[in-house]
Length: 268
Image 1: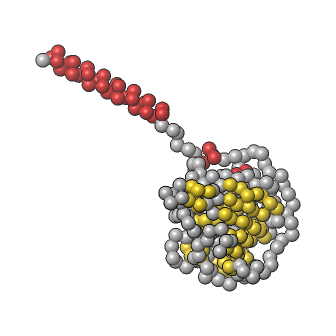
Image 2 (image 1 turned 60 degrees about the horizontal axis):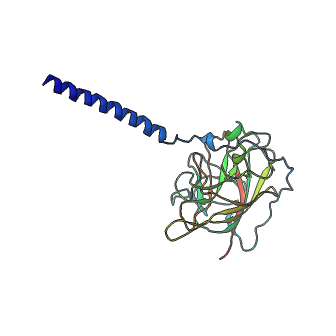
Image 3 (image 1 turned 45 degrees about the vertical axis):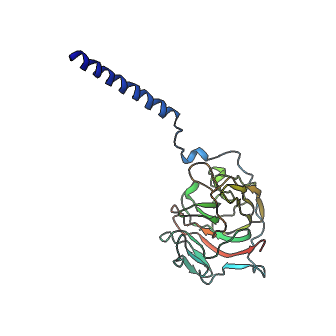
């Protein structure tokens, strides 16, 4: 009986050792969890270009005016039907971090978009913590899901180049750094072609974007690899139409302002 017990005990210990080795091997095969810095690119830095003249004119006759300086009737708190509660004053709208992102009531597919924004002259911080916001060209879910064109103060402020102003966040590197100084109005003119999906949800054709930043071409028919992610590699998730979203980033010491936002739908 004692001999049998010791054999059983031996087998038990042996099986535990084998199980432990198996766990080690499985752990070695499992890919390491990605970190935010794993998808940051720091070089080469785009050349600094003096931007063209500031433009703030009336929108085209066929444009849908999303913000004309009077109210936020075209906007809601992102992911809800609640009225947007950013601060409208003196013809501009300022970010309200307490209520979070806002997005359009209307949904869009392919379009031309015009957005003007201003980084406060007394902005604090550095890197990604300096004047951070974003224009989401398609808001496809809660939080910051979707396709983000970065808003950031990159006037003498270094950061990873696929996360600077003019970048499609963590994907494109702008062809130039055309940032104006904080306190001056900046302008994005965007042509967005939405991705297409097959009936089974697989990708049929990717998204493309062309961006002029302060009159300077910074993204030239750039092909997106999927939604823009802070951590991990981009992936596509099927959608048809989506709102346009403005980001209320939590790192800003003073609020960013927007004005003169309009869109022209393409192909309708």
